[in-house]
Length: 234
Image (cartoon, rainbow, N blue to C red; front, side, top):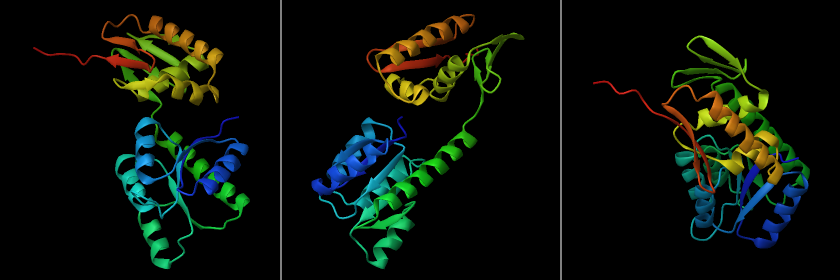
């Protein structure tokens, strides 16, 4: 079962492939970037649950990548796995916000254990801070109770419908990437889960059809947008 989506930034391709294999064997999905600039490109294309960074790399070093992550993706945790063992390097890594600073060579089980701890903590924090009640135009949506309310009339929706609607609400008026949402809700993405997701989108459109200011629109080959028009006042 898919655990998390990781970005690994490592310029030594032999080490990189070994790390990718180790992490994939433990259930992770991994993208490998061979330098700092490639890492920034991957970060723009895809959402990652955590990043593993080498320090000494061409074009842009790991500290530079870390600064970019903290500025542009402040909720994404990262750790360093590097041969740089100087105290000043380690202190700089932690000062940039690293969750950990691991020196090569390292114990594989220790790395996996630390990574699991980081991701569990991140998941708990995310669940704690993400809202569970939403206003969608004239609708009120209570995720925990799986209820949609319109003009005082309550409609109970299914658990899967609630999970899909919550993701749409978290991305309100922005694109929710279909593949990311399917993987988050089902734990993996394939044709059948994708088709099931589309069915729930259709059902949610019907549930939200009483308010003309609300729509779930397709973005061709990318995903969906929950569009909610703000009221205008003359």
